[in-house]
Image (cartoon, rainbow, N blue to C red; front, side, top):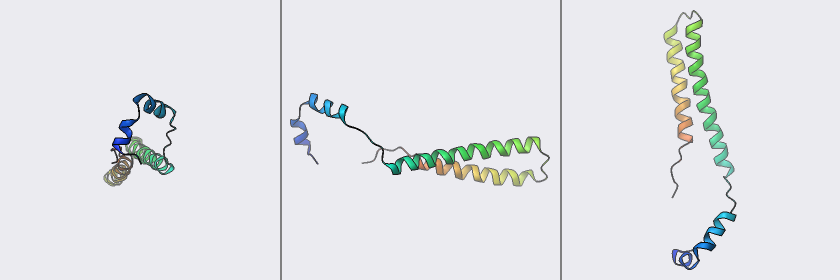
Length: 91
């Protein structure tokens, strides 16, 4: 690991060249997390759509239970997906 003093000695042109040629790879764990997050967000969208469409086109006897369970699934799937896609800068 280089220190700030060592980095200051390297010319900017050389640093830019190193940055251009450096191959950036996303760790596999982050890729899996991102895919799981996208999946959970999609589940939330599909369940929400399914609840709305089901209640409109079918004569459901207990619409309240359908809405409660559907919204419960939507909220937690969306929450989990957004939690996994948290893109804060890591120090």
